[in-house]
Amino acid sequence: MKICVIGLGYIGLPTAAMFARSGLDVLGVDCNETIVHELNQGRTLIEEDGLAEWIPGVVASGKLRASTTPEEADAFIITVPTPLDVEKKADLSFVESAARSIAPLLRPGNIVVLESTSPAGTVEERLKPLLEQSGLSAGTDFSLGYSPERVIPGNILRELVTNDRIAGGIDGASAKKIAALYRAFVQGSIYETDVRTAELCKLAENTYRDVNIAFANELAKISEDQGVDVWEVIRLCNRHPRVNIHQPGPGVGGHCIAVDPWFIVEKNPEDSQLIRLSREINDRMPLYAADLASGILSAIEHPAEEEHPVGATYPKGVGRPVVAVLGIAYKPNVDDTRESPILTLIEELERRGMDVRWHDPHVRNRPGNAPDVLEATEGADLLILGVNHTEFRQLDYRSVARSMRHRNLLDARGSVDAEAARSAGFLVYALGRGHRLR
Ligand SMILES: NC(=O)c1ccc[n+]([C@@H]2O[C@H](COP(=O)([O-])OP(=O)(O)OC[C@H]3O[C@@H](n4cnc5c(N)ncnc54)[C@H](O)[C@@H]3O)[C@@H](O)[C@H]2O)c1
Image (tube, rainbow, N blue to C red; front, top):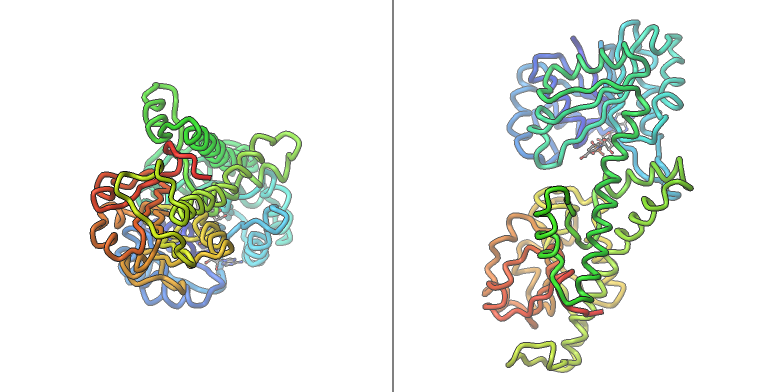
């Protein structure tokens, strides 16, 4: 069996490699020539645990090749981007161009699966008509459907195998064929359903998480006002057997949770008020974190004795405040900065006149990355933990403290070892933890 995977990004490349490892012949297609060239040399540009070790083997075995153009195959899997446009609607142009490139190659008996996250109805309304320009009929001549991916970046290769999966078909036979296709490597259950249900499931899963995070973010603000620690509140609430409150933070990033809810709002604006409001609450969190930072810095300029531990002294006026931010990826231990709220936070701090330096050990090829933590914190008035990468768990607070002009730390993730930081002389603040700094 030959499979053509269109789009070799975070989802497409691991999926293509997984099919190839299962013994199928896979052609990976990407319009980006560098990705294609690198893959054919056995290299990947994506940071994903285990992938760089796998790729040389599957490429050398001849089971995985890459090209900029698709070829005839038994199955086509579309894993191209579906970003938001300026009106916060799904930009389906990549899906449509992938469909146009497949249509002339379609043969009776083929299977076409969309994996890209898309508004409900995309397969029937946008993909099917383009594919049927081949002269073949979906459902009659070829199978067509939607099978969303639920993997978590950083653990994709394991979750591709173990996660349960949904196989949505435009008819029952298509759903069966799609389920059988993924059986090549999926060990979790595969649930067959209709295509529109599968599309909405993917959106509903991520929207559930976005709404839950918005609730946690509101709780964080409420906790600050009540003088309690939201992280402790949530930890204790989650001891209830039927409660699962997510974590608050400086915003929601990535191109899934921060994007997918809009695909529901786009189709049903009147009926999705909670969903829209949650998105807006989460989108405002980087500004909230910037307010906390401003509050801490203005405490340096105008020290209020009651807010500081005995013995803390600050010069009045620090000139242009310098802020060091650790982590800019959208979540821990990945290199992906798409929709990262920390980038919005940095922009906002700069807009407020602060000099911002940052360091992220995972992010390559982005100008401005300080070579290490101490280079970022040198002369800083405030250190912000933006992303709780594993590397930041065991910071050498004494060295960091020595490098800084003022020892202030804002923990935006509730994960700093506050005792260690305090004993190195830091004043430690945390989003959601018992201060009203704004
Ligand atoms: N990354 C995730 O964690 C994740 C999880 C679940 C679902 N998804 C969804 O999967 C889809 C793909 O996401 P991703 O993170 O892999 O994107 P990505 O940007 O990492 O990769 C997409 C690739 O498709 C290529 N491409 C675009 N148009 C093309 C075309 N017409 N022909 C060939 N190649 C083309 C791009 O060059 C790019 O390399 C999106 O809809 C996303 O929402 C992503």
